[in-house]
Length: 487
Image 1 (spheres, one colour):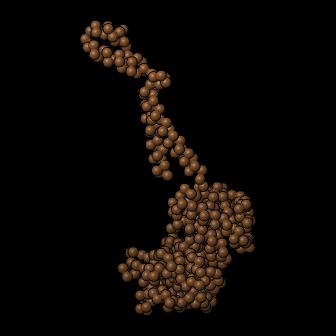
Image 2: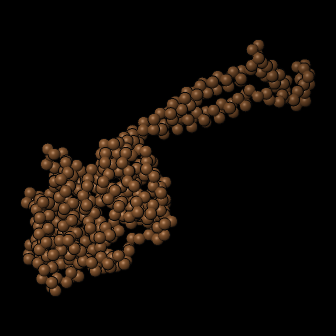
Image 3: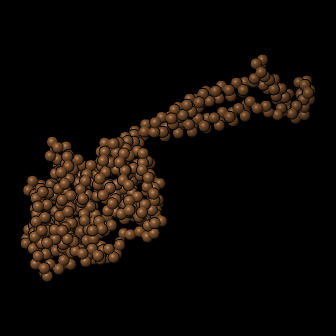
């Protein structure tokens, strides 16, 4: 493309030069004033030698037109202009042909692959049948998010920003807008649709739809989790501290979601980025595991996935850096960090801590191994006032110690982790109830609400490109979830 532009520019300058030559040599010029009426009289001209006078006369005689009616300068100008014009016409035809070629052939490395992936996304609605996602128009999603205003932004990740959108009748959705000029976003976009369209679990975030009408704007539409992320609940100083019953149930439901991915899906799925900022909480504080952009479907005959290191610092399996192989035990390790974070309310990575304790996993292994597990416990849990809390906290930390084993083969399976957490919830009486007082406190705050929802609501109409669309004209969120589960 750059070479073509340079060629056209060179031809443009050549045409200007040729035009100037034509002006200089073809256009008739005013004749010189006569020096004398005849050669004989030139000898009498004052202050002018006769030889100069004769040369002027000869010059005018030689410049007269030939028998063809064109002087020599005219022939030169035509001889130069014709080849240049011919080359310009050829280049113009090449440029027209180039512009008329299919869009994906202009940039094979990017546009070609992007279009292929986009076409595969469109094919999902037919491939997955009753669980296919709806396709939204960009205009409607832009209106729902108030033109992706900053005040509507509720999250920001490595691949894109998440905005709160309001559809018809005030239904809230989370719209993930993938960043521009990042080829990996295409793979991320396709990966999330491909995986989430095939899943159905109460603790996995639901994918309502997508938008890929413009390759520069790839959007994913998810169910909205009104209470944000577990990371925000643990580390935001303006939020009330979560009681132990809520934290324990979050751990159990997250483990159940991972167990579903590892054992109930064929082929199995490794999340690869388990962390508290990817664990969402709905209005009832139930877990919605999210962000499957780095997830991988694993062939049934394979024991691992070989890949370059990915994931988040502080949560990533240390064995991953050595062999670049991902197993189901890698998710178990990341979940072990989440368990310690739930107990301690400490950051997974904190540069302000002692060098040996920068990584929360290293701190936990050291403290638990030395019997100093109490140093990890969040003082806001008031463990000393409740022996039941103290007992279950200790057992959860012991479970995390097993998950954080550097030898991946010595780590428990996610099935074992789920069994332990279910037993702890049942024995402590936290298996089916969250702390209602804490929930009412969150309801009173509404930390992520958007004012004037009616102004942003839109009328969603079915797209002809999707077979199974979600009806967003329902009157309640429960009906919306019910409709999406039936599709």
